[in-house]
Length: 271
Image 1 (cartoon, one colour):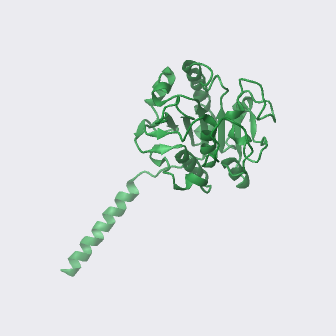
Image 2: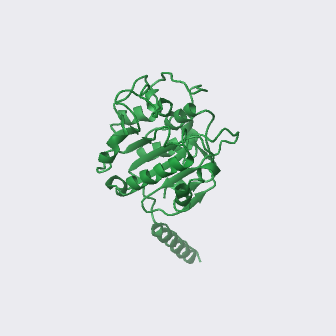
Image 3: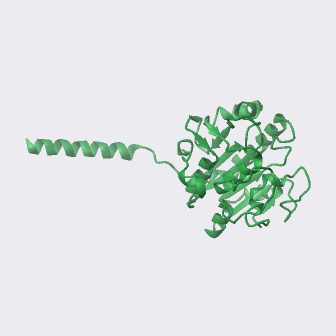
């Protein structure tokens, strides 16, 4: 009897092992792209024709919320895991404790492509550039050499060297000062440029989110997750900007910063 029980357990173990090995593994992205749009709720963002169509084809976080109002503390949350007590759209130098400095310390190539940026002028480049939407200038109180004009993106997309790419539209294309349609058309062009590039085909992920909604208390914003070979999927898990940072840091093998340390990563939308 004991022998038969042992044989049965062995067979069950083998069956379980076969089941496990037959499951497709999760393929981790090797490159991360981030686009942050401005000041529209989940429903408002979907008024853009392209955005609404894209939402039906990619990963969607339907229960994603910004951290606070106004814009600047949300940008700080995405890039450092905390707001640093900032509660207004003002500039102040902060400690160099952000994902940019993490990447530099880890010798991981990263760049922030800012539309309208004059090289080296992270704070005072002329409009429609908006320094409030460039969080990397806050950390350490200087303009990092990794923050470059938007025009350098197209060339960099031809290689796979850059592992973290932050893409900052100007204050018209991010829907802050112009219509939803204007930003939506910019997104159409930008997503097309990224997803047709060698950098994208070499296994990347693109996160598109909005920094905050239009001033409501629930602060729910649309967040989309694109992968080269992953189709439409929906997650109702409660996520926020700290979740986004946690996800990016996990992908790039970085320690999680501040509130990202306890945040739920968005793994169900990665692959």
